[in-house]
Image (cartoon, rainbow, N blue to C red; front, top):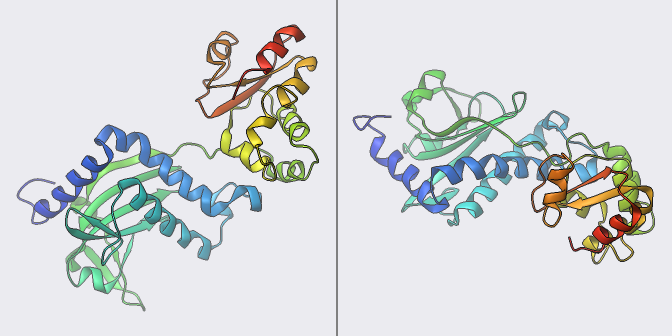
Length: 285
């Protein structure tokens, strides 16, 4: 969008304020796709429903993705809700989300030529896009029965894209047998439950949030992963190392295992003597 565009002043102010609030464009690129995936996982609710894909949702549930993205985005930016979804730089801004190919704009937004933050979640390509535009009637298709109008394809040229076609991170539950996961949640004993989960998921990176879902009934869930009677001590005599990305990164690297962040764990069969396993298992997580 060039400075001679009729929407340039408004849109550029919103774009600059968004990037200022989150610490720059690079931070947006790093954080926004994860925000979208977190909102999607919140709605899919894999722990309670055993689902992991947007395609598993019905049409009513899909509308909630936009609502959660709005909530997550407002919290991420640290801005209040005004007359519209966001109050940015002294302006009221609508947030519109779609899991299809365009957005539906209500009459109260386009009749006043109000600015919008547009979020697109491409479910098949597992991508997301984020843009800002002004909802002008000439950018929109004919109204539906509710008076809402979709953004026309030619109007995509009037969107200031902050990011476009960015890959979403994988769901933290992707690849996990969720039916089995729900069976394990009912197993007595948090440490035994954790050990059995890792036996069945060797060499898989497991995020802390997955383990919190597995250990939903434990007052101190992370204790069930550590040594001193936790899953590490249970698995050590079997030659299975349960490693933390926060404390065991050098060993993870030396074993050629995938990178684990501070909030991730991985178990592997190593053949390392039991005594070394026990020493490792006593470390924190």
